[in-house]
Length: 65
Image 1 (cartoon, rainbow, N blue to C red):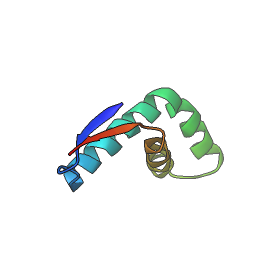
Image 2 (cartoon, rainbow, N blue to C red):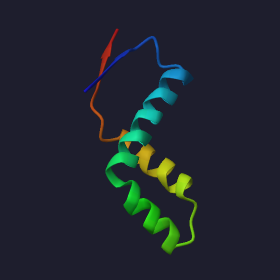
Image 3 (cartoon, rainbow, N blue to C red):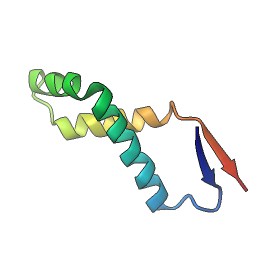
Image 4 (cartoon, rainbow, N blue to C red):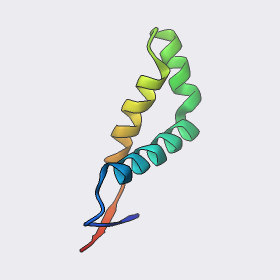
C-alpha cells in the first residue's frame, strides 16, 4: 500500500511512483521483457515503460487529506 498526501500529487511524486514501478517490473520480469524485445525487434525501454505504467494500476493507494 502506498500512502500519499492528497496535496502532493505533483510531477515529482508521479515520477517517483513511476520509477518505483519500473524498478519493480525490471526486477520481476526484466529478462522476459528483454527476450520479447529482441524477438519482436522492439525497444526494451519502451516496453519496460509501458509495463511500469500498467503496473501502477495494481497499486493500492491511500490518500490523506
